[in-house]
Length: 498
Image (cartoon, rainbow, N blue to C red; front, side, top):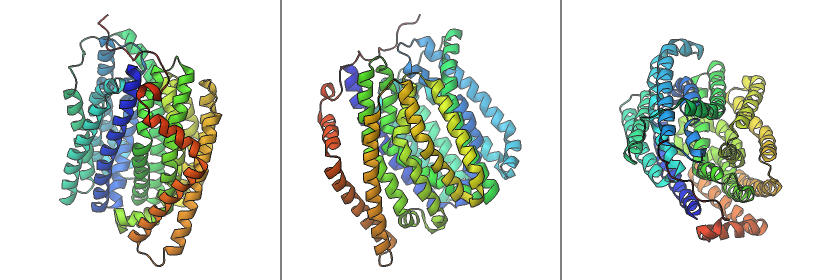
């Protein structure tokens, strides 16, 4: 009963966190994009590559997620994971600073050395935030996480925008990132009792590293993908192309955080709690996948179709050359509703080794696709990302279903139906834009296109997906005890020291 209440409340607060934080973050991003040139974003994006590699390898959540999925945690578990991550992150920061003079020329821009050194300070800050964040997520305390995220982006955004207005260029992006992370650390540590950090254990260290190594490997491979994309674009098409790819990826990430991550963030600890109840887990997975796909599919297709109208209106005319990149990368988001939940399922079940193998296969496929498409510039690299996602998504879906011993055919049919409805909506909007574009300004064309898309998709859902809507509405209106089948007791609180 307690887990059911936590799951429902956690989902609600996860959405509150996602929407308050991401809308604030989007506002900051838009203002910075209007104030800064594409080259500034390109330089910051390149400088972050080395830091992203180190962060994904050491401090981005692999070992801290060990605390989430473990059924009973002791204070010694918390202390061991905390000191492990902080010490390794500090060493990684120093390595980034030492290697910056080597990394910068390899990326084609020797002036990146100070940027890499300053961005490296994010590593120990992220390590300080990792364990408190994991414990709050484990207890479904998303209300506190919502406060953390919103306050951090407001303070960090004010700092970054102020520096951008004062003409500091790319350094305003550095200030935004560092201030943002520092505020997160302060809020997380002030929002809960002092953590038990005095005790450590070599046995726990081995267990945490064993779990975190594979989970971090998946994140490392994702960072390697970003390195491939950004470095290739920099060397072939210049720093402006990196900026265009950064804009397209940032928009994709913002929409993903708004519409998909609230489900996957709650799903991971929920799946971990349900790992001994496969029937209930499959039911929750199906409903979650269908709900996220219902929302995300039309949004990603709509973004792609209407990009020529909204990119110059929102970000300014100096980003007009990024329109095609944004359109292409938005298509990649169609694989996220199912893909992100697949990752949450594997981590919740403790199958991080399989996740790492799948990530490696996806990265190798991207490398094979990027090489022949590189001569086409940023657009060709974006196409490589999309083709990789579309090829690999059904493979990952089938592999996860097999190893999780689930029949996911109903989930696949529901997602396919929603995808086809979203395609019809996008075709209607595209036809309208083709007809009305010569006679309407960009803002008017955008407003009418959004209205037509919403009406079209809602009508299609009412006609062809009424059963799914009825079931989702029933779950949404039900009390926690009726919305989700019975399960085991909630995850117990911290146990006494051994």
